[in-house]
Image 1 (cartoon, rainbow, N blue to C red):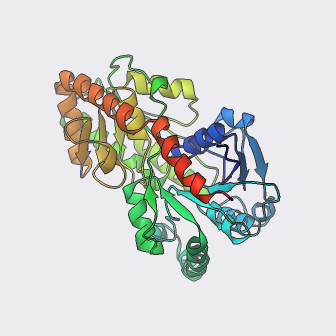
Image 2: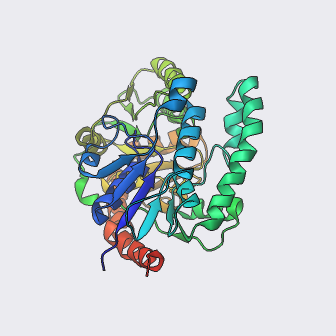
Image 3: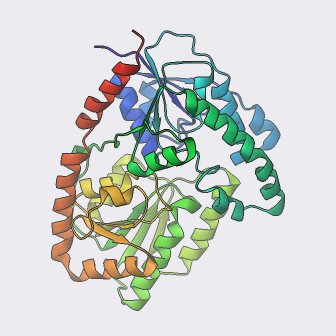
Length: 381
């Protein structure tokens, strides 16, 4: 049975895990994507073959500059006010607030990567990084956004969470007990293992909640305390033009310059990314309570051990002492880096177990088999 799928995505301006999922679903269903911002040169090249419709203008950026507040207003109002005119069976929004498209449209299956973290679980953390003036402003604005957000979510037909971690947030913040969990897949056949070139690899967009500074601190301990001067740390990720992220990038660049052997790459294409995975000793992943996290799965697909923080989505995908390690702080991460270096047989053993796990549990075939069932329930009869 054919599904005419419309997708909604707040922006296509990065090469991240969510964008990979959006791309894969769009390709599979030959879907049209409605987005509030599309930067062809910043996201995956394959999007050029997808029918993409941009539904906003640059009004907010012209008057407020390109920043988080302008983005939020642009994305939220764009979807809240938009009525889909073409025929469709189901609308499938992704990154919040694209699910606000529910206001003027129906038959919604929201694939929730996470509720808006800035207004829920990361609200206090984000506030701590803001100036007094901005804290005061956000303290007034955020309750209004939460009110609209919860109102929209109440009206959504079906919610699919990308992880148990995200599902718990949905229950906590929206009181929706009917959402189901369906993990995003990995194209494991694209990945390969080319050996061990003595470096640790952390790929993720440059952002405070991705905690590149955590990986740098762990590497400094590994290098100084355990005396591994022949190893390197490679961090790879895009940086948004938003001053908030630019400031963090400059901070970690300065931090990295104080330790020999750290390289930060901000423009890595897919081929280079695959090769960086393929030649690493292990993959690091220390973000704050990550929603799901494709990086550990991509590391395992490359037959590499992964060392991840013991929180959020990675707790669900990484098996401690079998496909990698779960750690609670930078010191433990450094200890496990040292342990792997001193036990090269484990690097190979964990890598094989990781690949086996990805093939069995995280294939796209499994994803689409389950996703089809949900879309058929929601489609117009």
